[in-house]
Image 1 (cartoon, one colour):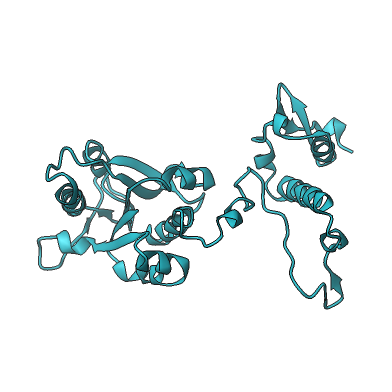
Image 2 (cartoon, one colour):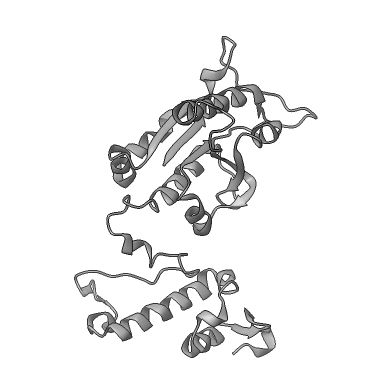
Length: 274
């Protein structure tokens, strides 16, 4: 996968040189380049922002440096592939913004097979909205939000997305089986994990995990997933297909405060609370 990030702080992305993503870059599984937006300015001060039309606090990132930066990346794709900019495959342009689609594991999986991702790291009050419109014929534009909060800029959000997407690329994670049972892969939070010693500061590992009975262990893990999800992220239970659960699952969720209505899980009315 080729990944480009446009930013005014390219040094932030040095962290991608370490850990699994660093190894993936060394082995050629991921080709990452950080581009300095200020390199695409034309004035002595390398200005990338100006005051917003209509008034208001803060500054807005100007459209022209973004267009030049993105044109440069788009042209390099055409040069490497077809020598024809119009025939080159359209990269996905991901723009971190609090007003975007929520980034989650499902979206990470959808993006992992892509050949080319471009991230636009905005700052200040954001990027001139016309950049979205201008980029649409040249990229597959995807505004994305990391969550319901605001960061100083898009770089931290992009680092999180690159890690979430990159580790799903075949060969990046040494044992692909470790990806299967993680939080959110099946719509639930991951079950708790333990390691040696079995007794630590008078706290014990659950006995079932020491039993060697794989059936009981699987059931224990399933039940702890359901309980943890119901307690910490109850909204995720609402997205579970009841057909994917068995009687024990449904009994557990009933006691956790959920019932099946019209073919889906819903919270039990307060009058039915135990």
